[in-house]
Length: 87
Length: 520
Image 1 (spheres, chains in turn red, purple):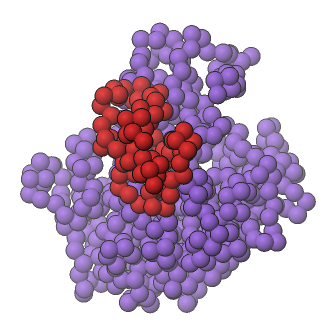
Image 2 (cartoon, chains in turn green, yellow):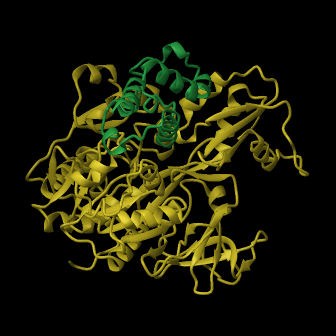
Image 3 (cartoon, chains in turn yellow, red):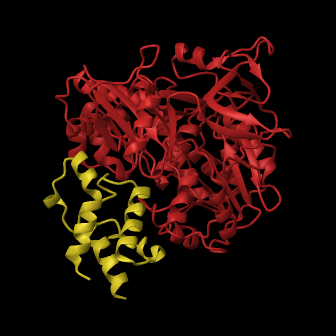
């Protein structure tokens, strides 16, 4: 599983939001926090993770994932999906 | 324990002394006893009394920290109301609340310095700031204001209490229709009526560990603080921004009395965290602030104690909550998959009225009366006379009209059916869509704006805009971010050539809402 593929999917799923907030795709770096930035509320963020679960046929362990400071960062979420898929 | 009086300060003082060595606040890495809280609160209260020239509310700015809680208790001991601000609100909104409240004193914890800086820069008057920590450069920068550092002192006497039952205990602001929030002053008598009912109905114990999931600008936080401290129990503070960390919060803090909006449980459910028996430390659970879906009640019940769940209902104007339904293995009433809001608290009254303001029997707008109802909006007689009304059938009695449509079954249990006006609930927060419109209209002035609440999952605020569309989404979002709290910011903006109008020539919001159906 390539990180780039997961990253592209995340960007695709948040594109509409990025437009509204006037954030360029290139500005969305690994440490961009999708919740703390105000881009998504917690419910929409979990919906995003659920969509990624569907697309990549994985099931995230939210109990562990939710504790991580990086959970809501783009890089952290990419890693979470990748690690879950590769496990 | 002695019978509680109707003066919050008296009851708190007694509880603080009676439970001196118990832990009052657990910040997980630091614990504070009732003696710690008492000494800090009394110290702050003396500074408040020294600084205040009038009897307006004391503004509280900070995280959910020991110092912030001591500020709240300090205001109460000084016989002042407290008015919570919110570090997550835009500066403009905090400033508007501060100005409207006429506060002269701000209690600020060490994490609030950034917001304090912006507030003081934007303010016209001189404030006394009672702070946890302050440096000389900050003082110099804001030399028009007075700063005092309050620390705990062992030998300070409690100030003489001179609160009256009718004096305001806390002043909150809730979304209004005109672009400025409306003030809800809740009196000592109002809040003690609530507490006395709750403490008679449920047994709260010294050993209990209370959750505190609400922001302090939300009146449901008062339930956590006051029921906890008046029971000699421990208030457990979650980490900041911990929406995804509820499992460790409940387990590590061994929460025994839970209170949240249903959204918190809904989020946990989406994360597949409501597993059977997962949170067996929870002895009592309360939900309030928005409709409680049956599925969530069932899942919560399975993951906690099967007989512990209570659905509460009530607007801030009726003090925290005023009706309750105990959901357990035998009683599971619902309508449209939403749990019943049950019956009024003992001693509180309700009636229902039709659109012509005539009383009805089985379905109508819920009106509330009794000792928990505030006497009116803060310094706003026009708004007060619109929402606080009388019926010929009940001469001399004042009723608060909630704007909530309810129905009642044969046994007298009530069911929430929805709103009758432009107000909606988003994760428990009251949002008046007209306030959003009003803020956005100010960007260019000419545009027609209509926000609607799209309640299909995931629910969101959608804002329609028409007119000379030289306005951009970015301009709109930036204005919203400067003036509205996060939960009021639209998620989708749609430009339309023309607004659909109804027969009265007003924007037809139902047509706008239906137009979304095609768009998924």
